[in-house]
Image (cartoon, rainbow, N blue to C red):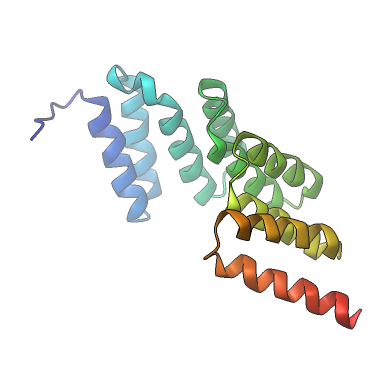
Length: 165
C-alpha cells in the first residue's frame, strides 16, 4: 500500500475528487488548488486535474472558470475528448446553441465513438426540430453503444415527430 505524505499531489487530487463526490465543492476546489501547488508526479495527468477542476466549477455554475479549466485541459492534452464535451454542456446551459453544437462536434472528432456526445448533439437538433439530423446522431450513439437506452428513446421520439408532423 502506498504511503502518502502531505505534499503528494495525487493525494490532494483524490481528496478533491472525494469532496466533489460528497457535493462539497468548495473543499474540492481547495484540494485541487493544493494539488496544483505541489504538482510533481501529477504533471503527466495534469489534464485530468484541469478537467476535474472545471467539472467542479461547472457544478458551482461558475461558467467562466469552468470553461477556463476545460480549455487548460485541452491545451495539456488535445485528445482528451471529455473536455470538449464538457465545454459543449456549459454552452448549452448558457443557451449558446451554435457553440454547443461546435464543441460536441469537436468531441466527436477527437473520439468518433463518443456516444454521449452524439446523443447530446442529437438533443440539440431535436429541440431545433431538425429531426433528420437528430436521428443521424442518435443512430451513431446507438451504433457505438447498443445498450444506450436514452439514445434509443430519443430516436423513437424523433421518428414519432416525423410521423405525426
